[in-house]
Amino acid sequence: MMMEKRTSRQVMNDYDKYVMHSFVKSLQPIVVASAKGATVTDLDGKTYIDCFSGISVVNAGHCNPKVVEAVKQQVEKLIHCCTYVYYNTPATDLAKKLAEITPEGLQKTFFCNSGAEAVETALKVGRKFSGKHEIIALMCSFHGRTLGTLSVTGQAGRKNYAMGPILGRRSFRTGALLLQMQPRAGIPWMWFAVCKDGR
Image (tube, rainbow, N blue to C red; front, top):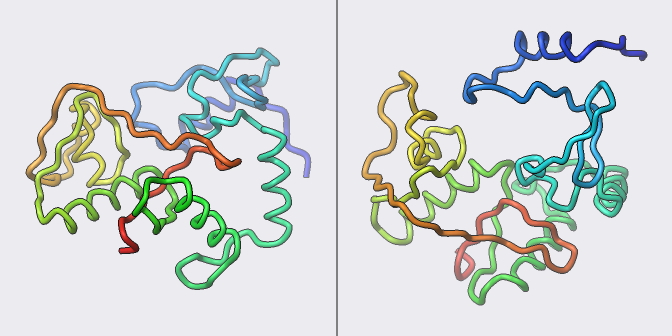
C-alpha cells in the first residue's frame, strides 16, 4: 500500500488533531522520518542529534544492528504469549541473567510494559515490605502519568488536573539519587522491578 507523501506541516496538523499530547507544553517542530545511531532525520532530510535517546528507550542507538537482528530473529519465532499465562524461554533466560548480574538476594524479575508500571510496582513493593506508607520523592522528578506515578512526580505543573485526590503521605526532597542498570552481557538498560529473596 502506497502512502501519500505529506509535508511536515500536514503531519503536524494531523498529529495535533488525533494524538493526545496535552501533558507537555509543546512538541519540537520536527517530523522524524528515520533514525540511525544517535541521529534522527526529518521528512525534509535534515539530520539532528537525538540528545533524548528516545527518552532513554534507545540507549544502544537508533536501529542498532545487533538489536534489529535480535528483534527480527525473535519476532519470526514468537512475538507475545503473556509471561503471566505461559512459560517461555526468552523471559526465563533474561530473568536468570538479571539475577546473575544484580546484587545478591535480588533474584525475581517483574517484567512490565513501561517505566510507570515499574514505578507503580516499586511503590507497592515498598509499602508491602516496609509496612510504611510515606513516600519520599525528589523535587523536579518525573515518574509517569498514572495516578500513582503522578503522585510521586515532583513537578506541580504535571499534576495540575482536576482529577481528584492523589496518593497521600508524600514528601518531596531536593538532592540527587541515581539508580541505573548499566548495560552488561549484551542486555541493554531497561525498566524492571526486582524483588528480594524470591518474593
